[in-house]
Amino acid sequence: MRSRILVLTLLLASACNTAQDMTVTLDGLELRAEARDDATVVEKLPMGTRVRVHNARFWESSDWYRIVTKGGTRWTKLEGLVPYPLRGETRFVRLEQLPVHVTRDPAGRVVETLKLGDEVQLLAQDPPGAATYHGVIRSGALRGYVDEFGLSAEKPLTRNLLASSSELLKKGDLARAKQLAQAALAMAEGTGRSGALVEAISQAETEPGALKEELLGFGEKAASASPPAKGSLGYVVPYRAPVRDGADERDDIVTVLPTNAAVEVLDIKGTWAHVALVAKATPWMAVELGDLAKVAAGETAALSPAQRSGRARGYMQLATLQSKRPSATEHLAKVNTLSREEHGDQRLDLLKRALVVAEPKEVPTVASALMDEAFEGERYRLAVAAAVRLREATQGDSKDASGKEWKIETVTSIYGCSGSPLEAQIEQVDFEPTGEFPKPSGSVCALVTGFSSPCDVCLSDFSEFDAEERQHVLRDKVAVDTALTDHEDVITNYLKATSRLEDAYPRPARMKVSLRTASGSPPGRLFVFELPLEVERYEAQLAVKPLFREARVSEVGLPESATEGRWEYWMSTLQWEDSAHGAVFSSDPKSAWKAVQAFARSLQTKPKELLARNQEAGVVYSLHLSQHCGRCPNRKR
Image 1: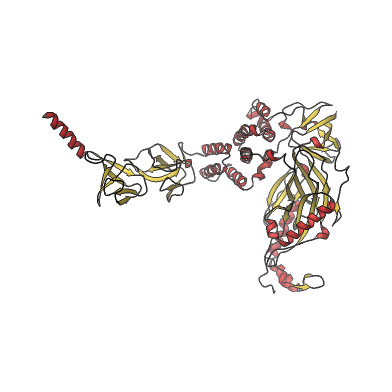
Image 2 (image 1 turned 90 degrees about the vertical axis):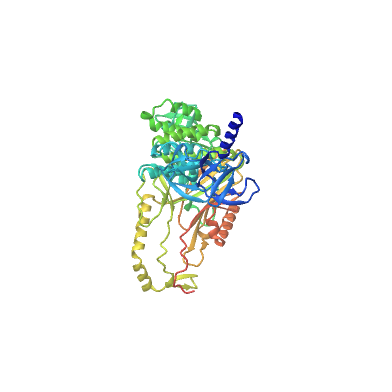
């Protein structure tokens, strides 16, 4: 009898059961009228609602739980419910802003935004959804779901944010590295060098090639072997090593050789080496071709067969050569023998050279080592440049395709240079009428953007069309003088800024042609050209007229065959603004001239389309045109 009473008591206790407080973790938790999957949904609870949940009684299905609301008794399963009070591991927000979503879905509705440094707790048990999104608790309440990338176990500080940004750069993830760099900048309240990191990553996202120069600024400190002896081969140490026509720094540069280019050391005279190189065996070389303006206008200057090949000789500083061609791995070994305190600059130079010569399989190790060194010295542009190189290698380096064909890669119009272009770095310069342009130290060439005549000085209202001259001529001199006086400040500032720019980067203008070579013979003869243009700035539509009588075309000397690599040619030009500079492979001078004419006609027909590109029918080009101002407000049609 007693046993029956005990069983009955347990059953009654089970029937009454104990309830527990729980929190809704789904947005719109469905409550049903009965404990069945097909029962009617009679109510939905918003995320974060606190409810009292009762276990099923012995005569009810154990899969269902009872909730009593103002509307009556409802039924649900435990999916979307977690015990209250909410507890979890502490995390800190490490981004400037971290959106909180109502569901575990990046596309879910945003209910609030957490700020950098906010402290939250992780929801111990997440409902179904994106694996990288986790529930966050704040002030004891479930706030929603956030991307776990925005959280860290340690309180965010500038140093650990930068360290995490570095690790992401090593994985080639520039976008997320930038987010952490921006947070570091905000944490430092806009001071310090972290702003340079944000700027470098932003530039890498839009112009990845613009940071390449950061990897190339190394010299003799990058040597890891002794100089070569007479009669042996020597290998170029710096990224660019000039070959001169005499053993004196004042002698003209014949060409510039790149890292690892091999030369035969014919003789040694003090600090100079007399060397010979065979073009076919030279992986890359820069050549100054002189003044394109000397080429007769409207004609094509061609080279003789003897000028298109041959063996080059000259003089090089012995310090720019070493007796071995070390691998990237050997460079790393050398770096590990040098202390950062005493040999910081040499370590950087060795690492940069190692990355330039690295085989694809070596790139990840070398790039990571260089990024660590660059971050240590707050050389953030260098670190991002290494990250871009790593990403290129991961995605499939363009070198993999370099042996397939010869190709004109780029044609760049340069405003001017403060020294020899063959030894210069190219810097982008934004033209502002009120800007300062301090003269750079060393050899630097300017790639100018935003340079144009001021559009608010519109004189075409005062012109008349001269049928004989076939152009508008200014007749109303008084009105012109008045207009110029009204805009005197604009004109003066423009002229002063132009003068400052030209003083920093003296003329002549130049063009640079980068060429990718492949094994074997080139597909034709290489011709470069300058095409001056007449731009009508005050018409309703941009109008460009090629000046064929002033066009110049000149052949560039190529070897009869070459190894895989990159070559670079520089040439002085007549003008920079309102001109097109280009290059094309062609079978002979006449065909080259026809290709330039065809390009010019395309430019005249569709100038805006060609401004958005850099290649047209085999011609690779760069354009610099005056700003299109549109028709003057009062100009008579």
